[in-house]
Amino acid sequence: MNIFNYKNSIKVKRLLKRLKEISPLYDLEIIYPKIRWPDNSIKESLEKLKIMRQHYNISINALDNDLGFQAIFDRSSEADLWIHILDDKKNIIGWSINKEIIIKDQSANYFKITMFHKSLQGQGIYPLLNELRFEIIKADLLFVRTQNPQVYKYFSQLCLSHNFKISPTIKNTNIKMIKLLEDTFDNIDNQSVQRGLFNNAVSNNPIKFDSETSNIWSRMSIENGDCLVIIGYKN
Image 1 (cartoon, helix red, strand yellow):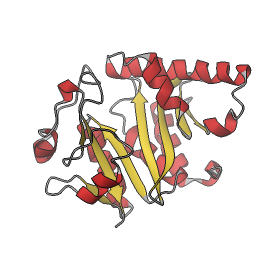
Image 2 (cartoon, rainbow, N blue to C red):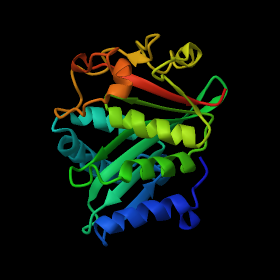
Image 3 (cartoon, rainbow, N blue to C red):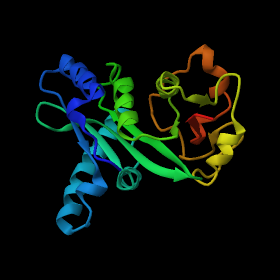
Image 4 (cartoon, rainbow, N blue to C red):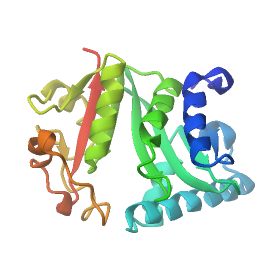
């Protein structure tokens, strides 16, 4: 991965502007964990572990649910990009992680997790953060897994604004794209749903879907841990 020149990035400036409208001392941190901690020495491991515990604590606040530290640890460990939103004391209050992978000769940007402390939720940060994640990891494919209709809404907007097609839509599911991801996600079906990824709903306060996308969400059982796989593609 190329190191991102964030100093001149319009996407960074827009996100920072919004954060400082919420609080003047809020800030942004971009970390490439595999580059920052290449050796997995004891010192490095302890530093990473300290940050991942903050990831975990924010996830509990964000979801009103405990996914378990191991779930957060595993996902954070394999990521190529961490973006942190920091409060006035430099504590993490929001975070996202992305992974860069190759799928059958195509580069892919996997939007793995985004978590916001409740104080940040509904503040218009998520679409701005997605734009930055897109800018840092250039790819032929974009995808995300979710139980959250707001993720579908804003991830779709991101893809369409950059001339990516989306699957699934209310009218169509691209079977070719699903087949492409079969080796990446176990138990993904022809409706673009990964069955039983979790034991139950991820959040104890799930966001209700709107009527426009109801047929997409009716195909899955959030209570049984199903997740929708949303794919942005060029061809």
